[in-house]
Length: 343
Image (tube, rainbow, N blue to C red; front, side, top):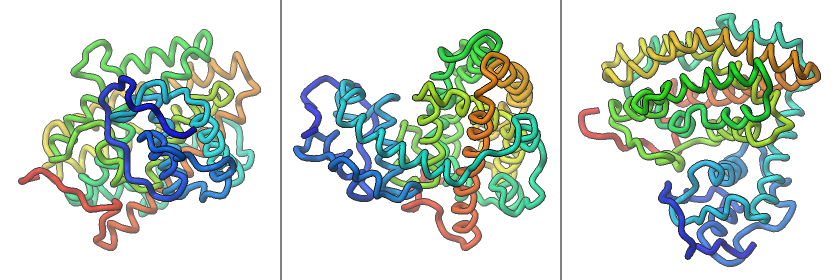
């Protein structure tokens, strides 16, 4: 590919990010319409699978399936050269995850472990923010999480056409709640934008991409990877089960952190909403989505387990990054935040 024709119509979206290496530089250059942008075949295989360069390149390529970027035409979503590079990058990422996560225990044991509070709470971001977090750390956390929460539940929608019966019906019911049960003002992505406004942050979709570390990009890329591949539908269900099982207690702690720091009513409300709703969702997902999927396709049980474990692995990596920085009094971002006065 020599560059995308930016003369074609394109919807407004976030600006293309600053590259972080040769791989992401090639992707950004190609999408900006610069000739000779894309790296040659095999470049992604040599990249660090969890590093900034590969994770940013993969994130940008996946975003073409969401809202795209300003000045980049919609037809870039299905450009064969971009898809070839995306396949190489996601294979590198997926292979690294598989190498770290050999076959685990059964589905019930794996899901049951999610409901047990960690013995070592010193490595839990939500426990840290509940007890010790300062307002600037909550602002950083919200900026990082905005890369997912401003499109909350979107990656999981891809699995619905790939499910049947109980699993499909239950997944659609949970997603209906995530999208505000028919009320635009209650869509969870909108509630998170309101949280960001309370914290003095910019609410534009993708605004904090340049500030985000590789560890948070990987957590978002995992959802897109699972969602875009039918063969990984079991892993996507495992990921969704992990999110719903851990959301309620974590959200309770984060709501308390927002109150303690005086973050604002919308900041409190986002997490309050998830405390009650996700406690119900966890039961539905475990019994009906996971249970229904495995009743229809029992051979997908190892994939469900892999989805749970991969999610936990990447969240642990992100947690270490955040807590190491914060305990040293340093920013966890690639550049310090600028927030609205008085926030």
